[in-house]
Amino acid sequence: MTDSVHVRMATPEDKDTVTRVFHDAGLDTEAALAGGTTYWVLERGGQPIGAIGLEHGDGASLLRGAAVLPEARGGGLGRRLVMSAVEYAQGRGDRAIYMFSRGGDWSSFGFTQVPLAVVMGELPDAPQVQAYRSRGERPGGTTWMRTLS
Figure 1 (cartoon, rainbow, N blue to C red):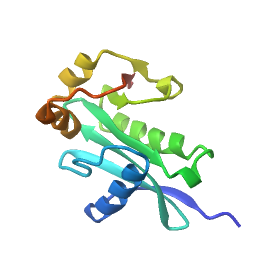
Figure 2 (cartoon, rainbow, N blue to C red; figure 1 turned 45 degrees about the horizontal axis):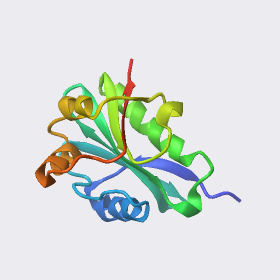
Figure 3 (cartoon, one colour; figure 1 turned 90 degrees about the vertical axis):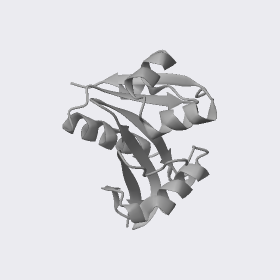
Figure 4 (cartoon, rainbow, N blue to C red; figure 1 turned 135 degrees about the vertical axis):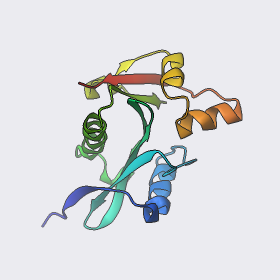
């Protein structure tokens, strides 16, 4: 018998869960579930196995973490998480989703590479952008955008 898998919207009580999943995946946990964000938890058999978030701006959102625990990878669950965030952003009327990535090719999710300045300019108040600015850092890796219709 296969345990059921579902994605649910995170509540403030899920902060430790989201932080643990992000930490275990090597992702930044600063400002997880901060104001102006929406997060989801992926569960199998009632146990958290993944998490993802969006930091919202004016007409655009920043994808914040997309993590599935190593023992649960390989079955399309990461895609399910990402598409949940994309559908939510479309539903709220966003024109685009942006993200920072240290690896991977996000083009299969409909993302294209864009200059860092585009992301930083579109979402100056996003918690992740503010955290980089307050530390005087630049996000490493590649910056991506997915246009929404």
